[in-house]
Image 1 (spheres, one colour):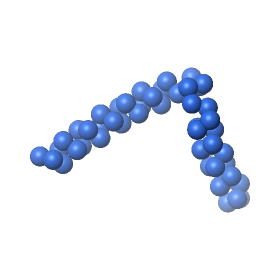
Image 2 (spheres, helix red, strand yellow):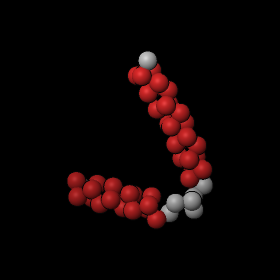
Image 3 (cartoon, helix red, strand yellow):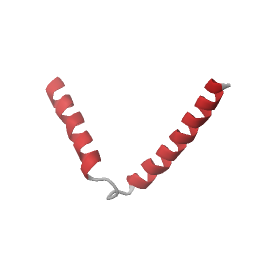
Length: 49
């Protein structure tokens, strides 16, 4: 079962790299990425203080 899991992960990574901007959920992940970036900025601000 482990081999199948590894293959599935590898395949998912490949699909992410090749299918950028072609899926509906890509808009979602782009928004999520923006949110993550904001959170990281705030965390670093706190760390700098």
